[in-house]
Length: 394
Image (cartoon, rainbow, N blue to C red):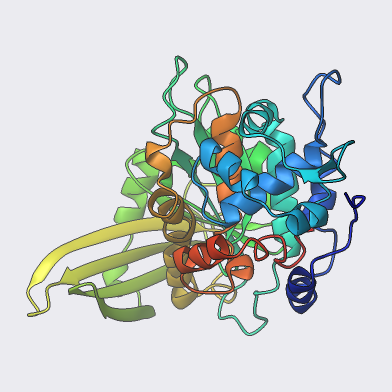
């Protein structure tokens, strides 16, 4: 039998060269910094090989640990060579890690180090930000519960930071049952360079300490909505003379059997509401109508923001608040519908978090190179050479 080689298959090499336009380290190099949780005795496959194969399997549409193992078992020799899989002493053939080996590794891998590696690599792939964008770069923060992974300690809950324009997950952190999103927001954002950026979050994160942290420690701005969890601030914003505010921005959209109209008002508050660094207050009134023009419902949202009017007018604030929902549509919705995450019953060890981290890979528009992620995953599943040949992967 021939000896093991490390040359790429011609088809894989062509795909890799065509797509290898990204700068920085490949995902494989990021994985090399993750500590190996396994006992040294009996280890047959390098940790980085197991993690790269798992990433490629998810990029081919694998939804579970079993599916990752099945995808790995079907890898041809030239793909195993490209991934530098283990070579059998007898026969000279490459061999993929078994399904149980992959399962045990993902259940034991350091969740924080795994997240940092994947998110760090994804951040390097972010070339989609346009210098002509109407608003400055913004980062959305929100959490998601893994509902199918019920354990004795409850359901795992993960919080993520997502770029508005890029749709790339920049950071992810777990929220265990002994704490909540408020206390975990700063550890989530600490590794990120937020200078000059705007951070958007829902009303849960409209906390004074969080606002001070963003402005004083991260040199960032905030755009935060206000609800009844801040009753005094909510009442103060509702009592502002909105009818006398001259400037406003309006947007109209039609789709999904309805028409939406949004009116955004923003007012400078020189004295400032009793909220740190608040330079403006804003109100968004959203009216949804049926196709025949009859009103369906009206919703009013209040908020506070740190940038002054010359840096963020009503149109910018409306874009920020609407862009914040991208974390629901482009991340949480994709993981729920395309990967059926809410019904995933991966429960043991760090398995739920590791699978969520892997599912963050296909949500990147930079990787998918298409508007329909599900279609891209199906194309990857038809050709084993596609996932390893994605830009910067190996």
